[in-house]
Length: 90
Image (tube, rainbow, N blue to C red; front, side, top):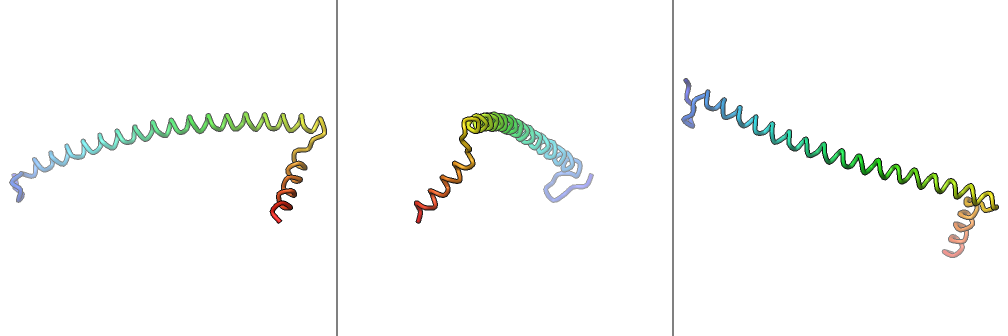
């Protein structure tokens, strides 16, 4: 067998390289697993927030309809408030 300067033969170096690659592969696989778990958790949180947002949007829509029934138009109130804000800033 050929020897290299470190005194190890090529077969030993190949074996060392193999084990290094195996350990690196194991480490990267573990990191990937951790990243996937974090991604799944974030996805669950995002879905939960989306559901909350949809529920609030529905509630606002219902409230807007109820206000219109009694004669209150939210859009015109917001425009009136914007106009008052402009006047108070001058």
